[in-house]
Amino acid sequence: MKELFQAWFKRTFADPQVVILAFLLLFGFGVIIFMGKLLAPLLVSVVIAYLLEAVVRILMRNKLPRMPSVLIVFTMFVVVLVFLLFGLLPLLSSQVAQLVQELPNIISRGQEALVRLPELYPDYVSHEQINEGIADVRKELLFQGEHLLKYSIASITGIITILIYLVLVPLLVFFFLKDKQQIVDWVAHYLPRERGLAAQVWAEMDQQIGNYIRGKFLEIIIAGAVTYIVFALMGLQYAMLLAALVGISVVVPYVGAAVVTLPVAAIAFFQWGWSSEFAYLMLAYGIIQALDGNLLVPILFSEAVNLHPVAIIVSIVVFGGIWGILGVLFAIPLATLVKAVLTAWPTEPPEEQTAKT
Image (cartoon, rainbow, N blue to C red; front, side):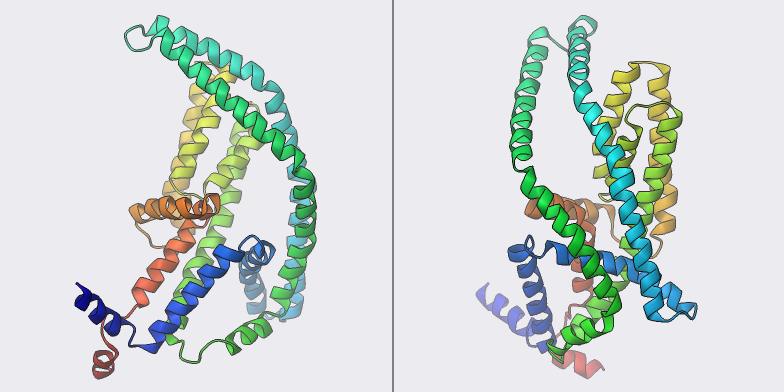
């Protein structure tokens, strides 16, 4: 076994480009793991600038110089950011406050519905099971309430952090767009010259992740907007809040839709009970999810992230277990990176590759 491992190690890492790629990957993951929180504004700015760069390129292809293109795109970004902060966020916060005030009534109605279950299904559910379930729910709510209180006490620090982000992130995004080539050249100056394998991985990542980020951004907007229109027309309470959750849920394929279905069904049930309105709303929600998965996603991602559903689910479980919610959100890009590395990783010794070429 030891000899086989040594032979594999010598065969694989005999190529200096493989060593360089492995070093860059370890260095990148090390920076994210040990300095991720510290560099969070920088990483967020890089992602936003990467997203806006596509719009800048579109304007440049239409004979507009880069600096005016950057100014136009950055102005659009600031306008959208102001709308989110002063238009959408207050609506969402007000609906969250209303939901918190209504929560005791929702809990009491839920208890009434649970108490009826032993009468309706005596062979399957007993009063003892229902009482134990209610007690467990109360304990969990008490725990979450204490956690929320601790969070509210520490919210002053969080507000200061958010204010700093609101200043730093737009500035960094502007300079990343404005001085993109200078920054890229500066980083490349410190990289090893023999980085052909790393460049191959980056080329595939650039195409795949670029399409993925732009596609997900459009999917969030379309799914959230359509859901809000449908929920508002049907008279569902907290339509804006639920639509925002549905829009965010598309970031995590399969798992996100399943998780968001619970609050949608719960609020619809507590508003209408077992009625035709509840059935129609769940039917409309199911149609939205079906159209998103079978029509919108194939259109937006026809050239992006060619991963099997099993690979996507495994990546969500693995990276979510490592990095929590951030790992879940970035599971697809990380899985794409793994796929690009496996595709570019040489399977033959350098001598055989040279002989074939």
